[in-house]
Amino acid sequence: MIDPLKAFLQLGVALLCSLSAVAIADSVSPRVLNIGYYEFAPAIYTDAHGTARGELAELTRRVARQAGYEARFRLLPSARLYAALENGSIDVWPGARGKPELTTHTLEGRHTLSQINLNLYHRAGTPAPRIPEDLAGKSLILIGGYSYWPNVNTMLENPALDLRLLRTSNHLSALEMLRRKRGDYLLDYQIPVEQARQRLNMEELPYLRLTQVPIHFIVSRHTHDAETIVEALDQAYETLRQAGEDLSLPSD
Image (cartoon, rainbow, N blue to C red; front, side):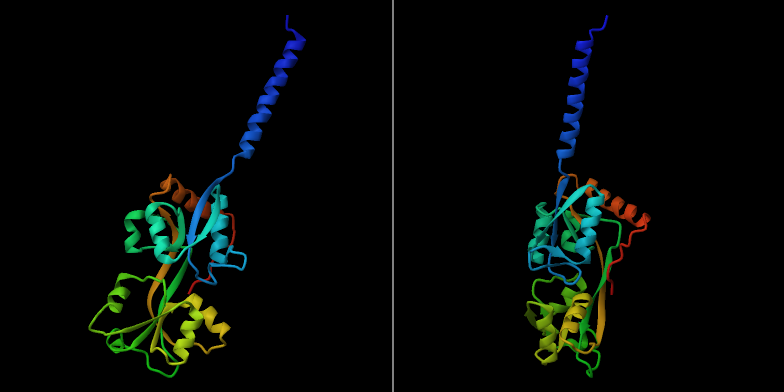
């Protein structure tokens, strides 16, 4: 014969164990992904409170959340960001695919999040240069901390061109230097140049496109479960897109 009191106690213990298991499961926080970035306004930048903002930052948060992760952003200069991907202290970079120095250290997501143009700007009223011959002996304005692709670096480092490289800290000062004829040409990316140009109320600048850069999720091979992370981000992006969410980002 079943003892009612004993059965009641067993049921209570089972219920308490079940509730405890649920509470423990609920208390487990999602894995944090360390997201590296450098200032690239308006796509991704740091606001006055030190928080990563911009449409690329928001898209990264949405996709990471859909994939079951929490995104924690870390601002770094480009050289330190690449080093962090190489040692695994940064898990993900929403950035340019195809960087030769990162090939053996990273996995690239399948989806193109955006496309950005790297342009050579010149002042209105001046002729478009023939590249590379018309750059010989000229001064070229660059943004400090940016790196480029092998074909561009080869041109910049070509001793036969005798280029004078002028580095500045931001896009606003770079445009001012070009406007004030403190440099002959400006090498810069189109999206931040357009934002800076509008802030300065400058006229549109003529340019030559040197290369177009696709933006993907770049995952460090040295982070734990790198293959799982890149696949989860890809799948989350596809899930959001199939659900009809707007994942479009400004592209050149």
